[in-house]
Amino acid sequence: MNYKLILLLSLFGLSMAIATVFVIPSNIEPLFWLAIFLICAYLIAKKAPGKYILHGFLVSLVNCVWVTGAHILLFNSYLANHPSEVEMMNKMPIHGSPRLMMLITGPIIGIISGLILGLLSFIASKIFKKKS
Image 1 (cartoon, rainbow, N blue to C red):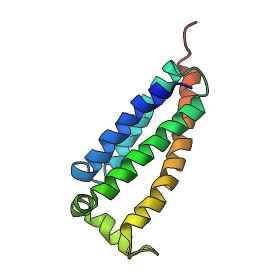
Image 2 (image 1 turned 120 degrees about the horizontal axis):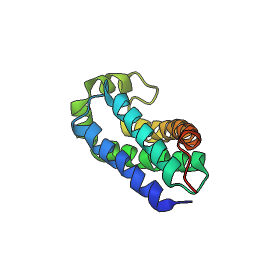
Image 3 (image 1 turned 180 degrees about the vertical axis):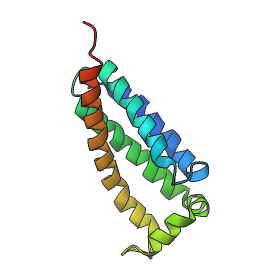
């Protein structure tokens, strides 16, 4: 396992955590994540010592910690810049506690995105073979 690679690639997640609070609107956020996933998958395929799926999965889990943590810590700023999320949160079953809702949904999204990044990393490892 290359934990340094996982931590370094998770800095994309830290950047997105802050950017999604203040700059990036929800409607274009998936495009940024797609670009980040493609870059991470390529770098995992080139730099990881194997276990590409696990590396991708762990990068996304650390990203989940960054994003969920930033959204909870910067909660008021996040809500001020994302009115559509406020409306959506009010329709959720735990609408009285949006921070708790973020704490619950964040890891679920992290696991799902981890499976996607793991798969992309595995595919990239087959496309971009390392030179021996």
